[in-house]
Every structure is written in structure tokens, then in C-alpha cells.
Length: 250
Image (cartoon, rainbow, N blue to C red; front, side, top):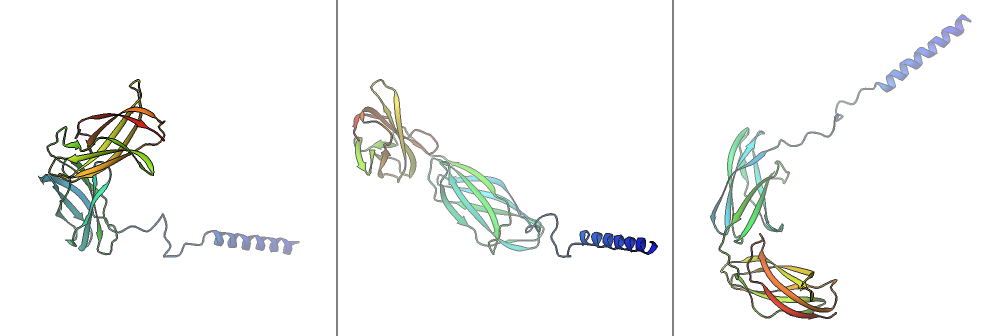
């Protein structure tokens, strides 16, 4: 009986040792713990000033803080117009960033339309294309002189079929610079109630003429008083209001 008890004790002891060993195996020395490996050393950007030297450009001045070793980097600039469209994209040449230092960076953005606001989104990468910074942003509004008849209707409104039924509104830009604008067509019934509206965005070069096609979809056939006018991308009026009684037939 004594031998049997000793055998049982020995079996329990071995079982405990094996169990503890299985559940306490240390991780390999190169295993990653607590999440993914650290990212590249980050460079910090911040905008110090924005200047507007003329009506078609602006200049962004930044500070670049490099807490890492000396390296070359490239700045990437995306310019968005106030209506949300990307209008320009540019890269700087390689810039030397000394280790553990802050350097100034000046970026000139040229060839823009007047009478519009812009946002410049600026980030940096190393020369291999690896992103190394957050995105800094700068805003500028390029002034101009706008009149209520900067865009003038060049011909009477008419209905056209371009696979879809549309109102053709042809405008001439009487300014000597390019303007991107939004053309509105508002439809009223015989009671004067607004029953439909269509818009089109067009860009007209200085002195140029462009036709905006205001597509009709979901409106019933009938006779409507149609009012057409234009705003620039920032909501300033750039045309007079033109009205015409039009018959719409599908």
C-alpha cells in the first residue's frame, strides 16, 4: 500500500511540473509585444505665416522640426479650392533636414484663379516615399473685383436634348481672369412656387464664353418660369438674374 501511495504522489508531481512548464514558456527574444513595432521617427510641421503677393498666388511659410538623425525629405502639397476640388499638386525638391533641429520652409503656390478660397495640405516623406510627418494646412483667399454682371448671358435660354433634357445657359465672362462658377436654374409653376432646381459648375477663362447644361430629371412636362443666375465658388453673385417662360416636354 505504501508503494502505491508513493507512485501516486510521484505521478501528481510530474503532472504539475509539466503543466507549469507548458503554460509558462517565455516568448522568443525577438517577439513583438504590446502591439506593432514603432513607426519611423516623426517630423513635425507647423505653419508660421501665409502671404498673398498677388491675386493668383499665395506663399506658405512653415517650420519643420526634425528630432531624428540628419536626412533628406520632400514636401508634398495638395491645393483644394473652396468647392472641394483638387486644383493643384506639387512636390518640392529634396530638402536637407539637420538632425535634432528646426528649419524654415517656404512654399509658393502660383497659377490659381482669383475670387476663390484655397486650402493647402502639406506633408513630408523621406526620399523613398515613406511618410514622415503629419499634415499641416494653410488657408488663403485670393481677392478680386466682382460685379453683379461679371458673367453675362450671351444668348437666350433654350431647351436642348443631350441624351438627357437640359436647359442651355451660355455665359460670357467679362472679367480678364478665369472664374469658376455655379449656374443655377430655378423652376416655378404658375402659382410662383419653386418646384425644381438644377445646377452646373463651369469654368470660364477671362473674356471667354461657355455653355452650362442644367440637366432636367424628375420634373413633369409643363410650362415653367425659369430663373437662371450664377455665383462664384464662394457664393458671391457674379451675374444678373435672367428669367424666361419655357415649355418642358419629355
